[in-house]
View 1 (cartoon, rainbow, N blue to C red):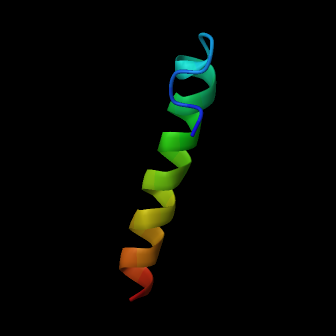
View 2: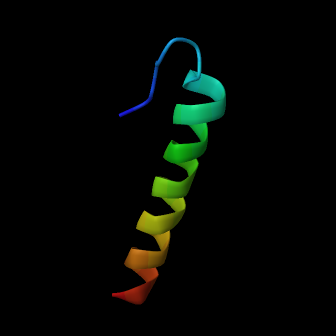
Length: 31
């Protein structure tokens, strides 16, 4: 959601994807 929205794919979707990856890594280490 928000990957390629009007042109915010870099500032919007990109940042969100980075947060998701970090969250997944934390979840993996938390297991």
